Length: 88
Image (cartoon, rainbow, N blue to C red; front, side, top):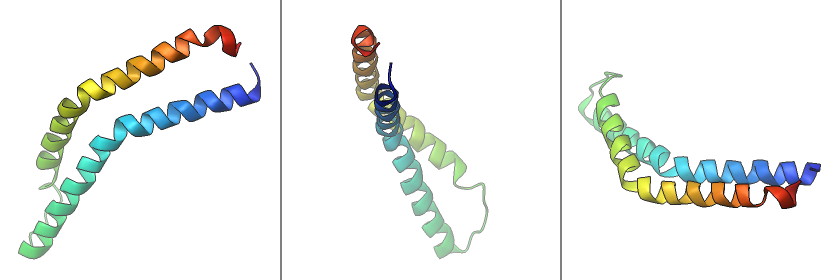
């Protein structure tokens, strides 16, 4: 296995990681921003208010994207395992 193969595998892994975590992280950012704007408007400055809605929305985002994430990970793993002989 040469350096370019290792770099390709690392790049593919990082891209899959970004695709899988993207929807959940984007949900957390949007919910946090909305709650922060609400806190600024109402002048409620409590740091713990955003945790529960953010966690609930992140769990809902995970449940919503779970079939897509599972299919993506199965495809990636299948391709990775299938290509082991050609990458060595």
